[in-house]
Length: 575
Image (cartoon, rainbow, N blue to C red; front, side):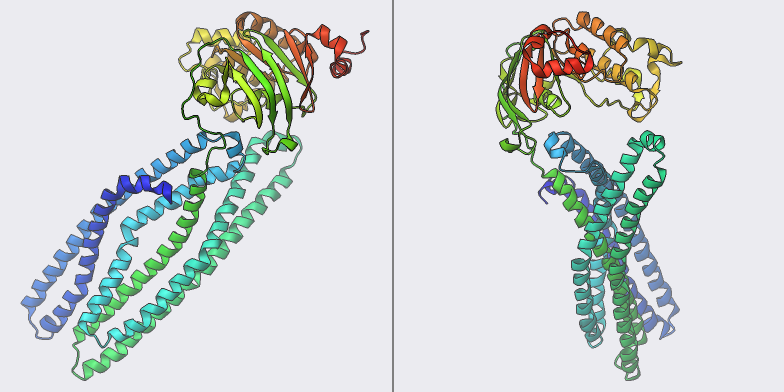
């Protein structure tokens, strides 16, 4: 995985230090059966108490050194794994932030949450395990095989028969287990998605009494995850008892053959005890290695899922040498712009869009649902790239300027109001982080939000729940408008931003904004014709094409589509 090189280069020294302590611990563990054999065969057999006490002290010292090494590698492994996990999670989050809307559309929101949390945790735990037990297990296993062979090469025949069988079992477990754990992570994605959708739409669920449906939906996703996890663990569980059985058969073989050799005077009792201890260590190591392979399979699946995000190329071409704005007045130019979400011109949702918006001008964009209004304004801050044609801001193609520089000029009130957990003050100051209370109150008054905010006990310090759940739709829209206004942008885009506000309040907002936003270039997307009538110009969209452009009076004379909208909302009028 290419993205892992950064972390390997950064942490390999500490990783190596941790493994060094782990090797010292493993060496201490390997010495103990050999020392025990000496105590039995020399001290106990010859009834030499001084030798037993001396070698017992040596064994105790070796154990103490092993414990010290274990403590040291635990401290290092925990430190490295936690720092690695935090950095990987942070880098993954930063990568997601760079994605265009096209890139984000490739991933379910629940899937991205799972990758940022569970998948990173899986990889982090595996790294921690590598520095604690995963490397130690094969070292102890190999060391035990060598030490046992040195004790008695004849008994090593049993090892030659047992180890290859175990190696084959482990190889099969990896090959079979990986697809199952990959499926488990996908089911976890689905569960997170269902839960997120329920929490976001809990008011709708309550309003329509769809609790049983949501319970059934969540239960289905939960059961699918449980079934996938159970199947994966069941498949992997077959191998652990098989490995244990194989090693235990080997131990029985050692006791049987060792007993024959002790009776024949070819081997000492202490050597048999040591050999059995080494076989027990081999069993424990192999069990650990089996667990390691289970963890490896899960970590591999998670790493590949993280890599899918980290290696995702931004669908928008990066500007190598971004141009600088030589003027700052908010001019917008669309020249024969064609846009398609699929990238195929034959599926275009905007077709041949051409218009100019002069600095300080207010343009309303009106049209039926699905006519392409929101898509059109999304091209200005370069949320998407046009398939063909040119979009310019202040005379510069938006594709030739850095996104950060471009978006400094623009403030947007989106169609779907988004507020964040925090105070009302925090949410308004999203538009200007260093805005003081006077600026906040000023824009709140323009957005007709000051009156209802002042009615709260905590006023601007009132805490908002996730998404502003303790506010009405109209209140949220007015705070969103204030957030955009405090930025004092050169270009202000209002995407159906007063749809939840009553007509009288909307009229007051329009009146206040005419004064406050003087000099700003404003684009207003609206469904209400009365909201568009006072604009300098109105663009009429129909099926992704401009079918009318001009003032209200001009369009009432020249545009049939505009006339139909007027009649449907206002009523008949002589034209």
